[in-house]
Amino acid sequence: LFIQKKEVSLPVKVELKTRTGDLVSVEIRSSIVHSESAEIEGFALMLKDISVQQQRDELIDYLRDYIESTIESLDDAVVTANSDNSIIYWNKGAEKIFGYSSAEAIGKSIFMILPEKDNGHNTAEVMYKGNSMNLLRKRLSENDDIPLQSVEEELVNKKGITFPTLVSLSVPRDKNRNPIIGNVLLIKDITQR
Image (cartoon, rainbow, N blue to C red):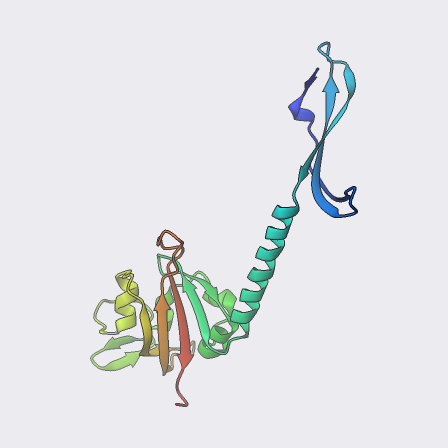
C-alpha cells in the first residue's frame, strides 16, 4: 500500500473527547490509500494534537490585542520607524498631538515631525539638511543604538507649529540583542507644563 501525497486533504481542526472526558484540539488530515495497481483501497486519517499550539496562539492573540489596545489608549504619541526612518506605526495619541492621521503618517519620514532649525529660526521644513543641532535628529540620522530618555525637543505638527515635547527613543531588540525594528519614540506634549 502507498499514499499519494497529492491527494492529502487540507487540515480540519476539531475538538475530540478523550476517554477521560477531556476535550483535545486536533488537526485531521485525510488521504486516499491506493494499492500498487493504483486502485483505491480506502482512506487514511492522520490526527495531530494541537492543544498546546492552539493555547499558545490564543495567548499570543490576547497579548497582541492587549498591547495594541493599551498603546492606542495612551494620550502620548507612540511612533515606530523602521531602519530607514519611515513611519510604520502611529497611534491615536500621535494623531491627536501632531494632527496627521495614521494613514497620512505611515510610510512618511519620521523627520516630518522634526522642525528644521536654521539660523535660530524654526521652520516647518521636513527634510534633514544636516545643519541642525537637534539631538533627536542627530540620533535618528546616525542610526545610533544609544537610547534617549526624556529629552526635551521642539517638534512640529501638521499645521507647521512647533511645540515643546518630552521624547524617549529606544531600539527594541530580540533575546540576542539584535534590533527587531528601527526606533520607537514615546512623545509627550509638554506645552501646558
